[in-house]
Image (tube, rainbow, N blue to C red; front, side, top):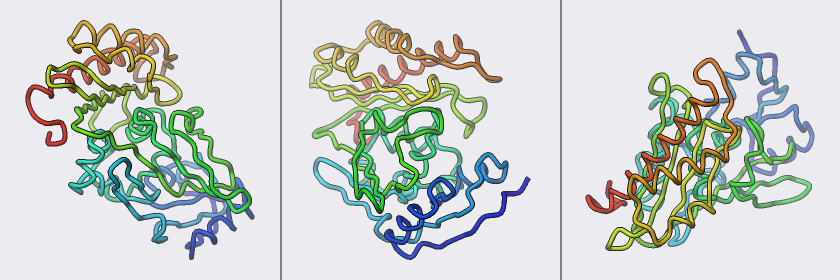
Length: 296
């Protein structure tokens, strides 16, 4: 199929984008990489009448690495996270996640903000953002700028807290001080396919391998990516072995509501979630004994 007719506008400035979004509302869509929106338009699952190309706006492509955070413009290419060493060191979990995104061709074109706003519940970057509880900055012509924590941003499959006249302009990723251990795993029918279940974990361990800080979550097993901050706090002071990891994973997945589809029913998807989450908890915990987390 072909996309329904639309007007293409190359945005001249962020103010230009916000003006057009205010004018057209839900009939307008911003586009940068187009790796999610264009296929949906081709299948006529999305039918914007106005397409606003925001990729060339320099204010949406800046990346600033600071000691306690990374401020990343919404149109930052996914490949930047994959290949830039400074981003590896600051955001190792995001680096781990992006390696699972589609294929190299889609990562070359796809943007970080585009993946977050698309809000596929099985997508990797929304899961990483939820686990780290990144802050998303949105802007509109009428209301100016507002900030939303990632754990409150994703409301349902392909549904976020973004208003019709708002544009995501920046993602602020927290940077943990000191060495961290990370892991990201997923399972899919084929490499590059949508994940049936995924899991992400970031830990800080002391010299004896005792957990001092933890964050983890799962994707693909609920309508939104899920993080479990209360369970993560229970890991503090513990040595994470297979028994601890599996128990935490089982408790976490009991809090989810998986759906069924052609690839997996709800029970199997929950089982996969337990397996994936157990695996990443152990992998991150064990990496403490083999190599510094920022180097793996």
